[in-house]
Image (cartoon, rainbow, N blue to C red; front, side):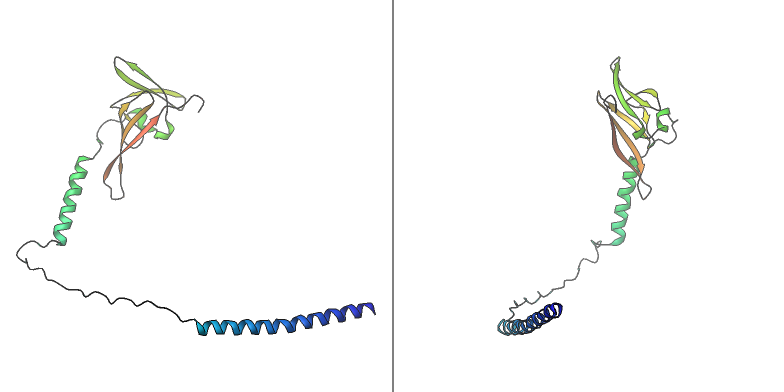
Length: 178
C-alpha cells in the first residue's frame, strides 16, 4: 500500500507542475508578442549612389596610357634586365663543399693567416676550411665574408618562373657540444 501512495503522490505532483508550465509558457508567448508589436524597426536611409560621369580619352594620336602591349613590353624588358644581372657561373668546376647542403655543415671556428680569414667547418667527421670567394652548399652559394662568428653566403636559386634569384644565407659558429 505504501508504494501505491508514493506513486499517487508523484503522479499528482507531476500533474500540478504540468499545469503550471502551460500557463507560464502562454504568458511568455503573450509578452513576446506585445514586445514585437510595440517595437518599431529603425532603418537608416541609404544615400543614393553618386552619378558616374564618363569622360572619353581624347588624345588618340598619342600612345594610350593603358595600352596592354606597352605595359607588358615594359615589364618584360625590366625582367630581362634583372635576369641578366643575376645568374650563376654554371661552367666553373665544382668545389668539394658544394656536395653538402648548408644545414649539414657546422662552423666550429675561424682562423686567420696572412690577413685572410678562414672558417673551420665540420661535416661527416671531416674538417674543412673555407674563405671568401669559395663556393659552398648545394644552391651555388659563394662565400662573401668570413667573420669570427659567422659566414655570409650569397646563393643562387631558381624561382617558380625559372629565373635566377639571389638570396643570402649564413652559417653561424656552433657552440661546443651542439
